Image 1 (cartoon, rainbow, N blue to C red):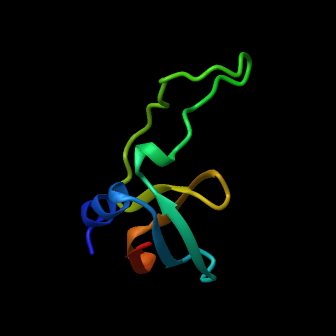
Image 2: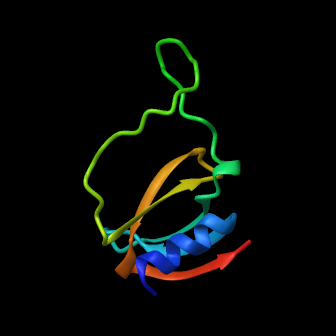
Length: 87
């Protein structure tokens, strides 16, 4: 599966993703890229929402998704994906 195919599925809504971490340990993650389910970023100093994004080079080998159970961003390598299923 390509990175773009994974991203397309994640944008549709919550998914159950299984992958091997770099350490070799298997990880199951309930995550999404659906903007309606991701909280707005907050400015730590004022606690107000803002639309600023960190600018960094895109790594085509990595997918970054919002973990709905941990309420934080997590990533995995495309080559380490075991399965992805819409929840």
